[in-house]
Image (cartoon, rainbow, N blue to C red; front, side):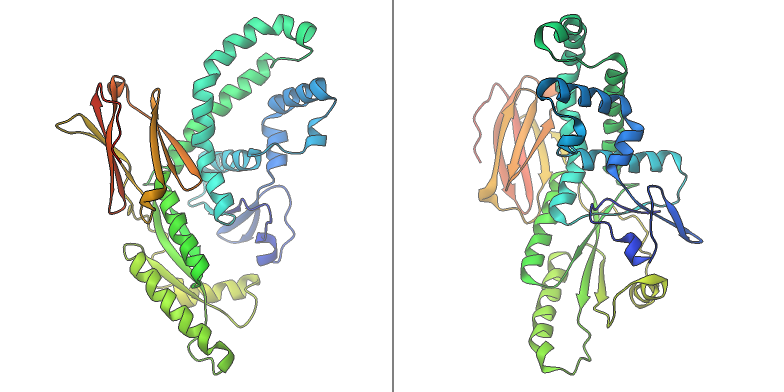
Length: 360
């Protein structure tokens, strides 16, 4: 199955088919599916949506339809649908076509972020609901979640935990980055690769798209060919550990089965593109003489842009405009950050008992 999570879907355009709300077969061994998160949300989580609709209408005379989908919900329900397909549909392989970098990062980090908040707040929330439900509507004019909504929220939390395990299972899931040989895109690719490692995903392939053919006899493209050649060399040097695929810039739009097969025949037919390769390293805790050490891999990160601090039972790491909370194991409950070093793409954080200073 080929799935699109990009809100500007184009699978139907590529395969020249008008697609509906469900998966459709386009070739003997291929189904395609453009996820409509609103449709998934309304059909699979109706109790939660009903509660949210009542809550908004009670608070400010708005309905959920007036407000539109809440921020982040598209990513959440798209991923939950992919997990359901993985668990129930029996496909040999699921390929997810994602949106550009920013949206994809939101998509991939959303389960970890939301499950972290739910883990912190959900047990308290359940007690609070039981205590406040009898008086909430009469006193505060706000309807608390009913039993069905709470059950759906609990099921959603469990699904998020399963989703995290699925996305970070390196024997099952890998990420392939698509780039073009231009300066701004190459720099974005390096940041993208660093962010994927930051959130502990396995990247095992790089596709360089829209490479100009060498036999173009046109002065207009001469300088562009030199620029592309330099950046292709740079990408190969920067991502030497990854399998790299070079996709030509064709002389027509790649629409329809015939043109799609051109890429397969020109670039992919001689290579095992579906082989999972565990290339990037996981974050890891290990015991050392001084205490314990956490290693987080951040290739191409800017040392001056990395910040970290300990907050209760989590270590919080910031790089660029992204932040990640990493829960600490129980054994480190009485340990504090004693120091941190960043060297050759690896951030090493040392924990010792009774220490609260951090030498970066």
